[in-house]
Structure formats: structure tokens, C-alpha cells
Image (cartoon, rainbow, N blue to C red; front, top):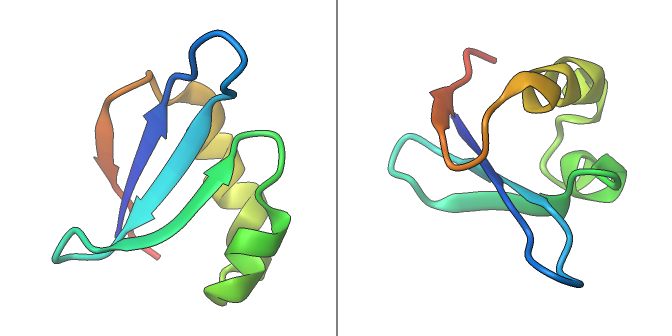
Length: 67
């Protein structure tokens, strides 16, 4: 699984993308509201771990997650 943090502009907030090994979009959510999206894909129990990574991840960088 891959994670990407996307910088928002003007009134558009920052977002996070979670993608699978084939780079298919699994989840797309605001940095400040990850709960529903992570719950939908079955990663609600990993939310704290994922958001800690997001906090330190530079915008535009792709990081491979081992979950």
C-alpha cells in the first residue's frame, strides 16, 4: 500500500491518498478527517499509525506502507 499527501490550495484542504500495489486509489480523505474513509477500507484500527506517518510526510512524496 502507498500513501501520498497532497497539498491543498486556497480553500481546498490538504488530502491523503491511499493506493494499492497496482496504484489503484483505495481512499482519499482530508488530513483532518480520516475516520470514515479508513473505516470503509477496513483500516480503522490502523488510523493512529497512518496519521502519525501523514504528519511527518512531505507533500507530494510517495511512501510505501507495510500494513
